[in-house]
Image 1: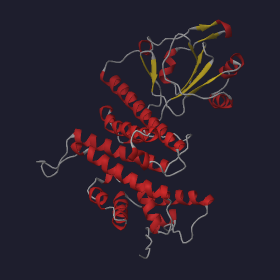
Image 2: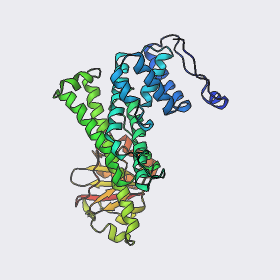
Image 3: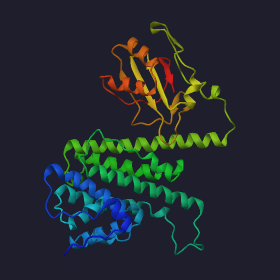
Image 4: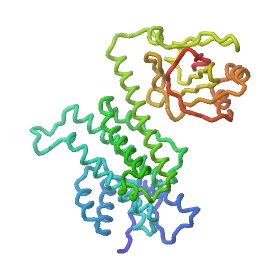
Amino acid sequence: MTFKAIKPQIEDMKAKGPEPEFKEQPDQESRQSAIMWSYNWYSYICDKKQAKKWIVQWLTTNSHTTLLKSFSSIKDSWIPQTAAWLVRMQEAGLELTAKETSYILDATERAITSNNENKEDSVNEEKTITNRPNIQEIMIERAHEAAGDIDEVWDTYVSGDIKASEKPKIQQFLAAKNVLAQHVTIIKDQWIKHQKEIQDAVIGTDADLSEGYSCYTKTQQKNMINYCAAIIAELDAYHQSKKAKVGVRRKKAVSPEKQVSKLKLLRKFEEFKLETVDPTRILTASELWVYNTKNRKLQYYVADEYSKTFTVKGASILGYDTNKSSQKTLRKPADTLKELRGAGKPDSRKLFDTLKTTSIAVNGRFNENLIIIKAT
């Protein structure tokens, strides 16, 4: 079949140029960048309806009859666009690897599963007396749309190098759709199930799953498990933050002093002549520096893009970005803390980055060994 390139509108052509074609196969060094540019082009020019059409054509051409029948009826919100862009690149002349072909099939199967498992939440238009959906149906549909956006983040990740250092940022999609706290579970359950599926493949408890994921190395499979865990952590962080915001709106205004009254802290640390800053400043801060006097770890918290500032609930802080927040052991705590207290925000970040010790995750819980160094 002769390849017929898409003709973008004039403004789109000026912005992105013509559709990418692969008249010659790119070498190994330039292949990934050529594919990423193509992803960007199709995401800008094309929509999910076009993406679905390409996958249907690919399934037909490759005689995947069973998948074709199920995939043809799924909702557009579940279309795996990254897989569709790969299909289109193949039409444009790119020779797909076995891993990429396997990824298209895997993404298609996951889209079918996600669509089928959420049918009970869809509006049955034939049986509905009125065409106007109620507010509950609208909010559930928004959760599904956000789930589709998160799937695209996953698709981009697994079609790349699948590195351990990559972290997802998905709270922006949930906030953009204003997904309610009670609907986060709709999305979270899918990712818990997907994570377990990969875990079973790694352990070898399911031979079919092990074979299906055999196109990935063991390291990549473990990175995928950790990436799923990071997505689940992002969903939990949004859920907690959303619940906290809703709780504040429904109850009477609580004074800052009362909000932090249960926060466990060390008020003074005589060895380094430290005194904790007023804990109420946490509530208006976007960055927080806390020192653990027991294990010499410096904790650095950054408020997430949705919350903007931290929230205190009991003996924990909420609303921090799990990707940007971490803690490191101080080798010379007295010198480092002295320098930190006198530094501004940019210099404080640089100081933390220069620490050579291993960075590990924070959990937001406070205890009697912690002293607040700065809240800005």
